[in-house]
Amino acid sequence: MQISKLAQKKLQYSLAIGFLIILAISVFLSVDETTLVNLLMMTLSAVLFLTAVLFHRD
Image (cartoon, rainbow, N blue to C red; front, side, top):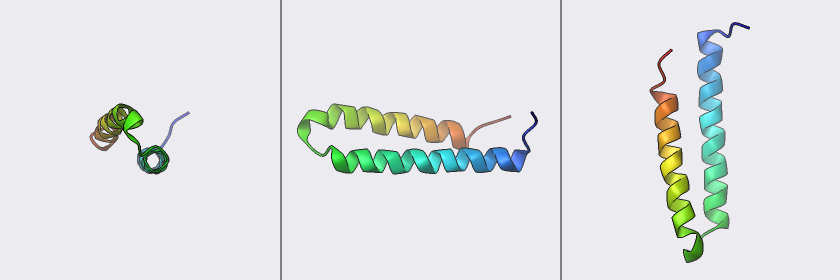
C-alpha cells in the first residue's frame, strides 16, 4: 500500500507529539530520585526518536 508523502509526514509528526505527551505524563508521575536514571534514559530516547523523525530521509 502506497502512502503519500504528506500523509507520511502527518503520521510521523502525530507519533512524535503523542510520544512527547506520554513522556510528559510519565515525567509528572515519576518525579522522585529513584526514577531519575529512568527519566534520563527516557529523555535521551525521546531526543533520539525526535531526531530520527525530524531528519528522516526517504
